[in-house]
Length: 160
Ligand code: PNS
Image 1: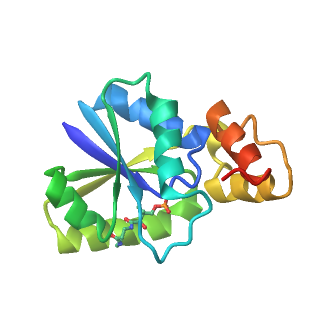
Image 2: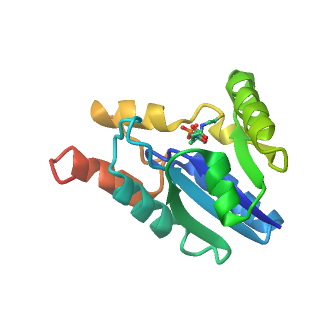
């Protein structure tokens, strides 16, 4: 069984990596799909987000890193994959995730969304937290993989 794990991954965090690893153990193939919609202003360029995901998941054989634009249902149809996996950190994630899952299922009834409960170690962790910490020079070394930390440091030295 193949699944899509979609998101912005701006940037990928240890919480995302935990979900990807756990999915890779349960499913034949995990396609990590990075949203590339222009309307959503990026912190890191899409190419960098893809590069960091590739780098940080390269040791997992059944993971593919890809990007998509437009609607997730159209991407899922194009890939011929009808299972979406989303991580749920807390009840606060649930309302929005449920709306998206129901809307996606309404538009594409074959599509199912499965929720994977985040590890409690990462229940507070989000890309937006990492972005805010890095803008103000906070230490993100225990929140993101090494390659991401290095990319963020480089960004704030004007390198990205
Ligand atoms: O990491 P995020 O930002 O929570 O991911 C949200 C994402 C990319 C999964 C969601 O915004 C999405 O699927 N966007 C694609 C556009 C789309 O299909 N919108 C309708 C969802 S109901």
